[in-house]
Image (cartoon, rainbow, N blue to C red):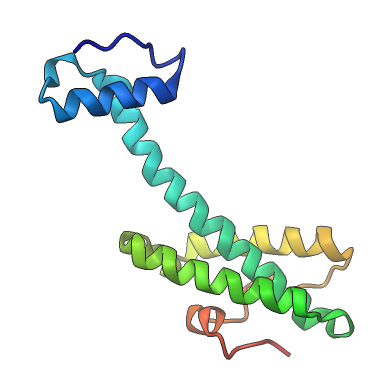
Length: 145
């Protein structure tokens, strides 16, 4: 089997061909440069998912706390779903857990969450730093007041 599809022409067909070459043990036929980039991108994608879900969860927790008159079942469902998805994601990719304790990562995610909350509420005055610990944020029983 030879690779006939170029990476930049059809990445899905290219990926299938690369997988077939790996399974067949034809390592000399692999597109190593692009294969290495794709593998690195998998890790980046997992990190982006964690960051995106955490920022969305934090934005909803902010809205919950700062707009008590607008609290809704929809917000509660979003909070619950993001917590569930985060726990699942961390279970599937445990190497991401240390990110949760990284102050630089926390700061960047908090900034994203505040931006989302401002965009969605038109409000300002949110805390400069996250007032909750990771355990609280992921705890189904925690709702800020």
